[in-house]
Image 1 (cartoon, rainbow, N blue to C red):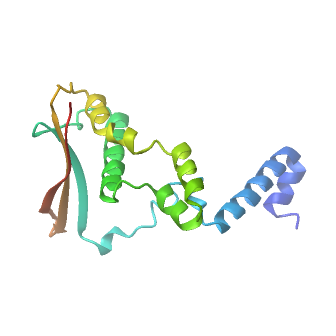
Image 2 (tube, one colour; image 1 turned 120 degrees about the vertical axis):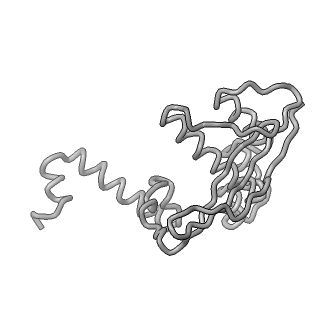
Length: 177
């Protein structure tokens, strides 16, 4: 008993023991409700076995037919631009629904309450429509009036040490006012 972490923590710092105990109880409740990703969104990032699949997908944005280049940006900005583009394209491919839409549709039968929660907990579909223009500006480009913004999905197959483009398609197109 004296070797247990929580027992030693209690003896060393009662406040830390209370904090850790509350975290364990709260996380256990959240885990039982199947919302465990709430605290650790990256906790399965190393559990995916990439050796079993030789297919990959990436996304790009074009304005007036020209690629929005982000590789020359500092690492933090390039990483932010890549991950946010990936997330937005997944949003587009999922019929403009976020995880919370699916979760509330499954867990909350009251449509009025569902709409209230979605309205207060998500940015909404109107705000999401402005995201591509924000992205282009954040990447350092000026967006002229009447510009055409497109999102492209590229599918690759990795064979014999070479990535081969197998398919590309435009998944979103908007002409700005």
